[in-house]
Every structure is written in C-alpha cells, then in structure tokens.
Amino acid sequence: MEALPREHLIESLIGIKSSRQTYYSVYREQERRLDRAITAIADISAALCNTTDGVPALVRAVVQVAAQHFDAQWAIITLTTETVQRWVACRDAEGTVVLEACWIPHLFDQIICEVLEQQQLVILHDDGLPITLGAPMCLHDQVIGVLAVAPAPGFPLDEREISVLRTLANHAAVAFKNARLYEESERLRAQATALYEEAYRQKTEVEEKNRQLQRARRWLAMARQNEIVNNERTRIARELHDSVAQHLIGIGMHLEWCRAQLSEHAVVYERICTAKELARNAITRMRAAIFELSTIHGSQSGLATMLRELAQDFEKTTHLHISIQVDAQPLPMPVEFEHAVYHIVQEALFNVYKHAQAQHVTITLRYKSDALTIVVADDGVGIPKKQLDQSLHAVTEQGTAHFGLHNMRERALEIGGKLTISRRRRGGTTVCVTVPLRSLEERTTNERSDTVDHYRRS
Image (cartoon, rainbow, N blue to C red; front, side):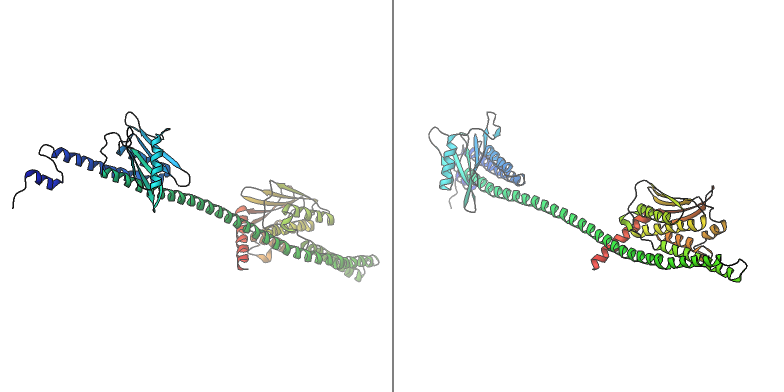
C-alpha cells in the first residue's frame, strides 16, 4: 500500500485542503469562526433568558446579540402579530450598540417585505449596497416576525453564520411566545388576586352583616320577651293596686271609723286597733309588691332613664325627694345587668321609705375606665349597727340577715359585682354597688356566643 503524502495526511485529519505554507492559518481561521459560533449560541441563550422581563426587554436583548455577533451596523426585529412593532439596533463609530435608532435604511423595509412574502431566509446583495440578511421568525409554521442584519464589510459570511441567524430568529420567536404567555399569566394572576381580595372583602362584610343581624335578632327577641314580661307585671301590679290595695284601704277606713265610735277601755277597741295595724302592714307590703312589679323598660331606654322613671314613681307615692346624677358617658350593658341594678336600687329606695325616715335620696351612676359604680345615699336615721353587722354575713348566715338586703347582695353577686352598705357620718345610709367592666365584657361575650350557637343550631 502506497503511503500518503504529508499534506494529504493533514488534509485527511483536519478536513482542510491547503499547501504546506498555508494550512495552519486556514485551520486557525476555521477554529476562530467555530469559537464565534459557540459564543453566539451562548449569547443567544443569555438573551433568551429575558423571558420574564417582558417582550420589549427580550427583543432588545436579541437585537443587541445579533448586532454584536454579525458585527452589523444595523440589526432589526419586526413583529407582525396584532400591531406591527419594530426594534432597531445600530453601531456607532466606536462600535457600541445603540438601541432604538430613529432612522433605518430603506433597504430593510425591502428585505422585511420579501421575507414575509417568501417566508424563508432572504439575502440581498445589490451593487453598491451592503449585504443584508433577513430570517423569518417561525412559530408553528407561522411567520410572526423578521430578524434582519447588515453585517460589516468583510464579515466572513458562510453557511455556519446563516445557521446562527436562523437559530437566533427561531429561538427568538419561541421566547417571544413564552414572554407573551408569561405576561398573560401575570395579568391573569393579578386579576385573580384582585378578585380573591374582593371576594374576601365581601365575605368579611357578609360575616359582619350576619353578626350584626344576629345581634339585632337577639336584642329583638329579648325586647319581645321583656315586653311580654313587663306587660304581665304591669297588669298584675294594676290589678293589685285597683282591687286588693283599695280593698285594704277600705278595710282600714272602716276600722278607723269603728275605733272612733268605741271607748279606749273597751275590749273590742284593742282588737280593732290590732286589725287596723294589720291592714296598714298589708297595705305597706302590697305597695312593696306593686313596686317590685313596676314595668322595666329594658335596655332600649337605658339604665339612667329607667332609674329616673323609678324615682318619679317613688316621688308620686311617697314623701321622698329623689335626684339622679350620672358621671361620664353611659356605657351599653346587658339587659340582665340593667335589671339587677334596677331591682337593687328599687329595694334600696323601698328600705329608705320604710325604715330610714329620710327626706332626700341621691342616686349616682359613675362610669369609670375600669368599673361602674351605683350609689344610693339618703339623709335618714341610718341603718342600725346590729342589722349592718348581720348584713355582712348575709352570704353565710342568710337566716340572720334582712331578707331585702340579702336579695340585694345576691343580685350584685350574680352580675359579678360587690355590694357594700355603710352608715354616713352625718346620718343616713349609703348603698354602693361596684361592677368591674371586665365582668360586663365577659358577660356580653358569653351572651353573643350563646346567641350565635342558638341561631346556628336553629
């Protein structure tokens, strides 16, 4: 077998036909151009990573890569989807790529039209004009734009460089589509977020409306219940006042007439006086029962208004002069709390009327930051010390305490408060009820929870 010459051996190894003097320089040129192609692919990959930055940023990056790789004085991308958009890059005297040039050669309009018409790569090489290349940007067999460049004079344009232009154009089309999809997904995400926030706001408003409706239903139910109870109490009180009380008064008047007709030494005289005293005591107890059955208007009018009406009723039927003092702005309170305070004050006023021999009574409501205080003070003879000592043990020794005082203390404990009774230095008695606001808040919260559970179960 005949040995090959040295130059043929080199040709078979590197694929380059060359003489002994020039084959290395050609090899170096091929290697340099291969490096340019690899660098171009790297630049293309970097440019196509701008998908999430939006379509304008992506297209500007592609135009800049094309201008730099082809050492082009001009590089243009024209997108024909929906409205025609054009991005231009040109190189200044120092070789710097400048984007958004104001003027472009007429030659680019010609090559863009030919690429869109032929839908394939077009090379224009007219005498006196620079070589211009235009590659279609294809996506799903549809041309959505054109990438055109005008390489610098002397740029080694071969099939490898044309492939680089085709690759850049096709990848730019895919990246452009992805950028459009990303923008659309971001728009839909923002729209979905806005709709979610609006739905959440409406949900919150509906929940608040439901809570308000539940509170309104609760108050209406309690108002209806209070109205029924108050109407029945008023009816019973009226019946007692108009029938039993009047009959007792009539009995007392007849006994008084009989007593006046008899001698003080007669045996019947003593019995008639005893019967009259019993009738008087019965009238007193009847009036107390009527006071207990007096109509309570509930929270619709407020505690202060209720106490004023109570004071007016007492002034009409007794000799007492009652004044009401309210410190600070009244606070909303549960109906049960207002009822308890109302009955405590009512019992205190009745005790003043029955035992204190007083002329004036002052009822004071003090709304503080941490507690509510109700004070009933009179100018009478004052509670006896023995009875005061017994009242201090009302909880443990109920049998030794005054029944009315015991009831007052029990009502105060039921609403989380404390009742104290003391003698005044200048005469008279002071009844004080103190309720921490924390107890009111807990009671209101529990009532709301019970009401919500009741409506959920129903």
